[in-house]
Amino acid sequence: MDRSGERPDEAFAGEARGELSPRAARALWWGSSGLVLAVLGASVVVAGAEHGRRLPVAVALVLAQVCTLRWQARAPVTVLAAHALTGLAVWALLPAVTLTGALLAAQVTLCVLSATRSRKVSVRALVAMCLPAPLAFGAGGGAGLTVYLLAVALAWTAGQWRRAQQARIKAEMRRAVAEERARIAREVHDVVAHTLSVMVIQAGAADDVFTQRPDQARQALRAIDTGARSALGELRLLLSAFGPDGEHEVAPERREPGPSLARLDELADTVRATGMTVHVRCEGTTEGLPAAVDLAAYRIVQEALTNTLRHAADADEVKVRVTAERECVKVTVVDNGRTPQGSSDAVGAGRGLAGMRERARLVGGSLRAGSLPGGGFEVAARLPVEGVL
Image (cartoon, rainbow, N blue to C red; front, side):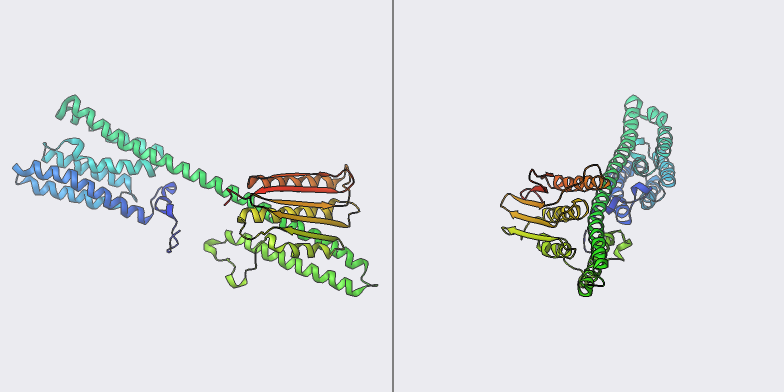
């Protein structure tokens, strides 16, 4: 995107709606006008040298075609009709100019119409442009007819090729938008699931000790307030991209650092507030990691801690280990609980594990998870660093 805020592909952004952007329309006008003046204009001047009275009229008709090219992107059907009539008039005045050359502006407009209008409309225009074919045959025989029909067919085909290209680009953009929405959905799930799980447990803990330990209850309530505000802030950042023209964009001075391995201690504190013992150990430096890897590692730890809180029965301790090596980042989360078999919670844990595996896969990594022989549950991920933007 340039400083004016216009996207690089905006020149043809309106083709899917049957129109060109103003910048593309101006470029098309200048280009097609230059082509008509260079080819048809030169032919008229040469052919009209011996027809002094007809030359000015033919030149005026060519200039009229050049002027009407200005509206070929906005009203190609009308402009095509005007170019066909003026082109036939030029050919009638100066038979030395071939019919293919005299209708050059009409062929250019046919190409634009084929690219920006429906197939039904463009086919009708193609048939209309083939109607003067007998005139081409009468003037130039079989060769003249072949050249004319080829020129018309090529103009229409070029427009169809452009239309197909724009349809492909539009399909790719829709797919990219769908993938981005899916990614954002995973982000929202991680934030909401983790925060709500922690808040529910904190609320329960506060209720249990509200009378006997009011200070601990207040601490849990403050943690609930902090967690809710943090989640709302992250949701605003995620959803700001959907605001029209960025009107809901969060001001730079109000933005907090996004999810990152550098904030693991903050994440661990929210879990510790529930009474869970959390050990965090980081080996190597996590600075300078690709953003995708940094975010994936953080979200895997977050989801693993959420699963421990929600699904690990009798768990009171969890160990988080992050090892940043030159080739990859290794993440390990181990708790000392047990996962109830056949419970409804196991279904939710399965969805969480699927989300973690998908995050690892998106950055080219791998993840394994399962119960340990001596008890507890382990989540281990390996996220490559090289080749990830």
